[in-house]
Image (cartoon, rainbow, N blue to C red):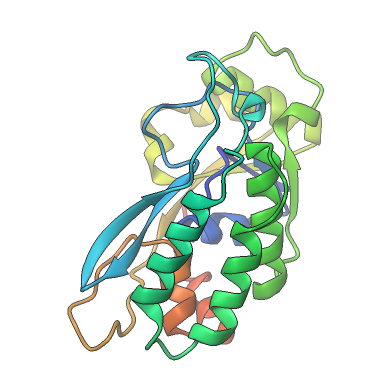
Length: 232
């Protein structure tokens, strides 16, 4: 069984969904410390041919809170502003009507817990794209929570019965294939392929939220993008 583990990100870029698509079980690493300035509750869209970063507001949290201990802010102002930005940015896009309906439903969900909020969003996007990958929270996996780094990843994989662990290429310097092999797990790295598509007839801007890919492409075309990777 192939497993991947990543922190929960809101509307992540295509490469994140390639990783989900490549595995049988995708683990959202929700019981680790919140990273200030990370991508958990923020992403980028295309506005006036340039990346625009937006952030969903989070309620006040402690500096050492885990991701699954954080909550979305109660006020809707931040969500309304983001939806206005998305509508203004993509209204002329070919798949705007169906995608803005999906995005609006996801952003306006009532769930307050950040980890569950993102899990729900990924499940909704998975339904839209026809995923079969199961999504689980790392907090539900029985393990030694004092473990860190590679040892923690191996423990999660072993608890889930993984035979193969897939990681983005940034993990090459962090993980040792021999250590995984000793645990009976094959370690492989996913290298995203080149993904480009027309964006209002201008030069392509990469690494934007999946929202961008969905606005400009059919579901079938985005599904094809999710296969544009290699494992090594």
